[in-house]
Image 1: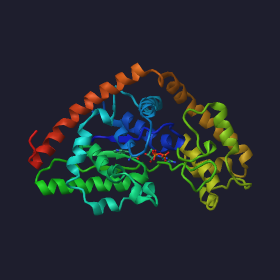
Image 2: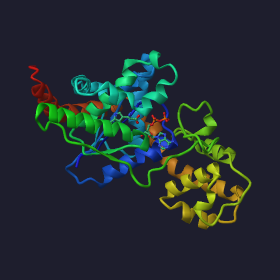
Image 3: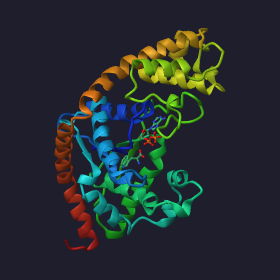
Image 4: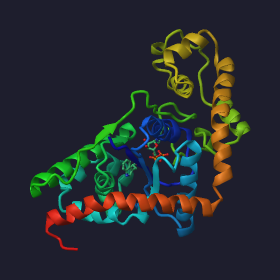
Length: 334
Ligand code: ADP
Ligand code: TRP
């Protein structure tokens, strides 16, 4: 079993990233036995599909590393690194460009979403983004890739690329990865609109809880979160048609590792005037230690760079044999 996942280092982590991704990584790390490491990386090569100033990108990589460590990723047990320091990612992505088909990439919904109406004006990088993602995964013979539902299609593409490469060249160079979408994995919605995903690209700061928000900011955002005047029902099924209420109950349930039904049972008959302070308290108490660790580490460039250096060295060593076999299968001499 080899666990691997990545996240783009694009600034402030929010509650959705934490509950939908990072917390699952930490759980998997903590469940692994002592001698098998998980691989977690900052997808900085992927991040060039979004324009950013040089200094911003450098800072984002360090900050995201600090955030992952603050959330519980242990750089001694897991391999934590940034993609750009492991050239094998870019190299294998190029080799896989010979295998991946334009028709396959044309079906990727994330590209369609991100390119929007201006498809012709989108970068080539955005289009071939999933091929680089396939390289990220296949380089390490990853078997379990914890991701959100939105990444499932990229995982299926990765399997298609691996299968075609292995078949075309008659060698078993790549292992087929499984998407690992934890059952309890939460989809956290905006605090201002229960039908929109909580996202860093939402223009309203009030729509999301950032991992850097202090206790007061968290409490205020929960207090101002959109709700409805109805009390909470006995069972979660009766929250149908109340997206904001459902989202807040969902957040409470995920944070406390309870079911939405048990949260409803506990607060049944009470309005949001009673529920919101309880939710705020859970959020404040859980996020405070994470924020404190983050603040202590985020400007310590020396420590962060040392961690990323060590991670990259380990990653390079593990990636090298697979990359060499891929070159060899293609008859490329290096
Ligand atoms: P954003 O939507 O803020 O741009 P990303 O697309 O960079 O976030 O997502 C990074 C990771 O966090 C992915 O694994 C994604 O599945 C997860 N994620 C992002 N937003 C949410 C959310 N609202 N609920 C659950 N998981 C989320
Ligand atoms: N595309 C992923 C996202 O947007 C990030 C990512 C890049 C990734 N490479 C990966 C995730 C490899 C898992 C495995 O969230």
